[in-house]
Amino acid sequence: MWQGHHVRSSGPECEHQPELCARTLARLSRAGLVKTATGKGGACWLARDAEDISLLDIYRAVDAPKAFSIHHYNRTKGLAW
Image (tube, rainbow, N blue to C red; front, top):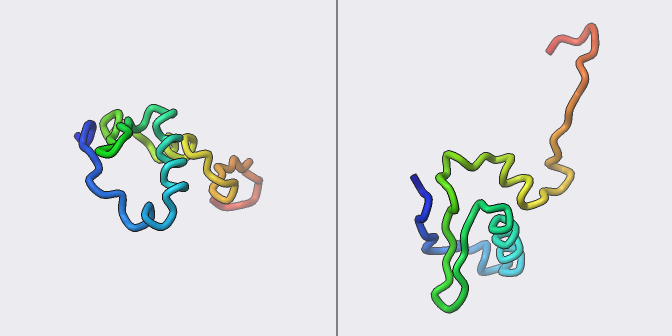
């Protein structure tokens, strides 16, 4: 559905932290989640349909900090889940 739609504005976050935005877009691009065009008229767009991109795909692509790591807990007898 959103594949190929260009981002018209990067938002205020990228105005204040352009290096962070560039690094994040580069990681998303390497993971095949977005495509980018450089230059004065540079842009970015989804490389696949949004429905085919999971939050886990993004998490893995940007190498999220451990505070957001995925934990696997063993079930313990006697505890109600």
